[in-house]
Image (cartoon, rainbow, N blue to C red; front, side):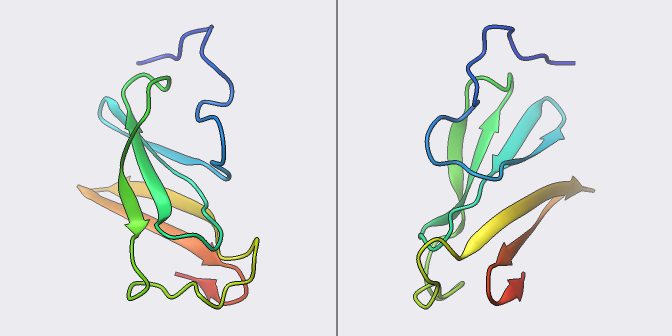
Length: 101
């Protein structure tokens, strides 16, 4: 089992990365965070040690996937939850004011 170093920074991702959701698949960890009304949305990061993180993409990358143009400031995509089962990643998130997807 991997363990973070005792001198690891806190928070693990400095800056604007609210509501992190982490899941482990084998030796790799995957993390997704809220992005409110901003695109690209829901960035996805990976790490093998819970210290060094690398962004590997975003869940929502264009308006045709999810139009956030009507989302008021400080609303939008909140509290994503990332899970993995049988080789597939699943993500659910709240679109504040409109529901979940």
